[in-house]
Length: 235
Image 1 (cartoon, rainbow, N blue to C red):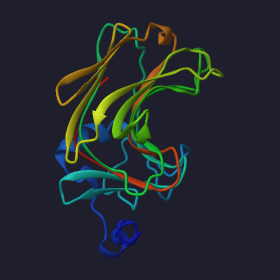
Image 2 (cartoon, rainbow, N blue to C red):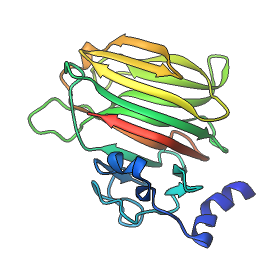
Image 3 (cartoon, helix red, strand yellow):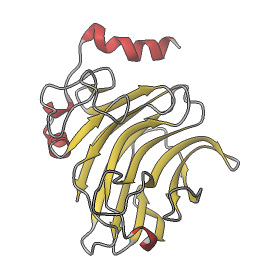
Image 4 (tube, rainbow, N blue to C red):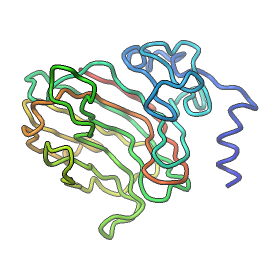
């Protein structure tokens, strides 16, 4: 508990540095906004698209002058980048997000998400569904596996149906690891440390427009933190 209190309040005691100050994060921050601690804009902790210059707070900051840090506590709370561009999984040009990341579950009770493909739920002339196609998740315990990373993939396009496929991506590495998510021609592929773990037809999702998200989203009580050493996107 002392460690978590320090993580929360230490930023205020010693100030914070903005991730935008590093060149390696400027491209992704120029095409995203931060949602924290909820999905709606909060002037204390959120920022609008591309407005990251000099921006940092207890949920989003530069750690060790190297890493973009996302920190959050509380069920259904998040500190996440929402990328602006939207696209269909049916596109012939690839949509890709690549990260070098380190996870800190801290005292999270069950699971948290650190990468997503989410369908837009606010369109007027397109089908909408307020659901993610993909969540890349740390689970404390699932199907006999402890401390593993999982791909949680929605397996249908009906809003009110529980239809998920969960694919084990392996035990959570202790240090930084590389992950790549690609969507092209209605195929979803995921690589972990260069190894292809998921290759799935997602053509049932063709009718929706989607966007990438990255950060930390808690599905239960407790706290979690995510560090990105690298985050690049091709939309």
